[in-house]
Image (tube, rainbow, N blue to C red; front, top):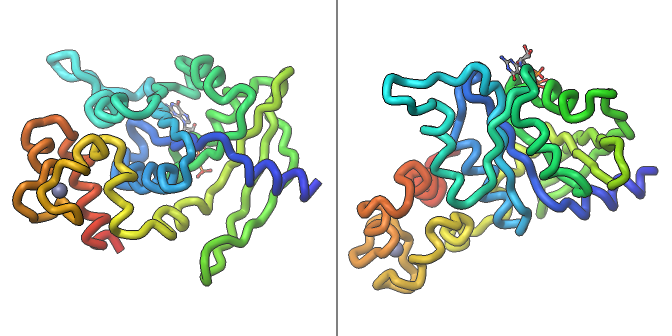
Length: 230
Ligand SMILES: Nc1nc2c(ncn2[C@@H]2O[C@H](COP(=O)(O)OP(=O)(O)OP(=O)(O)O)[C@@H](O)[C@H]2O)c(=O)[nH]1
Ligand SMILES: [Zn+2]
């Protein structure tokens, strides 16, 4: 069965990055690191926003969740859910059905609650594996592998250690292409090796100024590119 588990993990179809609208406060920089990791591995990324029952709507009718996660909708599927009320869970279930999905997110966002909501008859834990990966450095990730009941083979790999792998192996000059919003502009910069941090004639920074690239996403790119985030 260890072999089967390794095969499943080697054949991930997609990753679900789970956050909550509150308690704990969303951490978009962490999400952006996760997304870079997914892009660099050519993994499809889904974003889950849990605890929508705690969402705050301001006087103008704009929701906190939408303000933070709305900009991602242009590039990634975003699922607004509540494990507590069950709202949105069916749509998320449809998105994982028949697929092998790695689930990652900070502690307390309701991962266990959501996994339970996805399988009201309770999830069957088919085992855990430890994986050693990385070039030179060995990282151990304890992974819980769950199979959802149903005709299709649906697996969820609960990967608490995935955070430490976030940017492992992404070269600085490959980082821009890991932000899908930046891609349309990358061949339009004056300098072919533009870092998009300070160069004149940078099409990326122009697109940020024009509001075509979300400022928060560009800021994440810049932080990661400068190597400022530890
Ligand atoms: N209001 C609200 N609370 C939720 C929801 N989902 C989970 N919670 C609560 O959030 C807390 C954390 O939920 P867990 O499911 O244990 O979260 P987790 O992400 O598995 O946490 P770790 O085990 O630390 O990784 C619990 O008190 C849950 O009751 C939700 O949709 N709405
Ligand atoms: Zn540039």
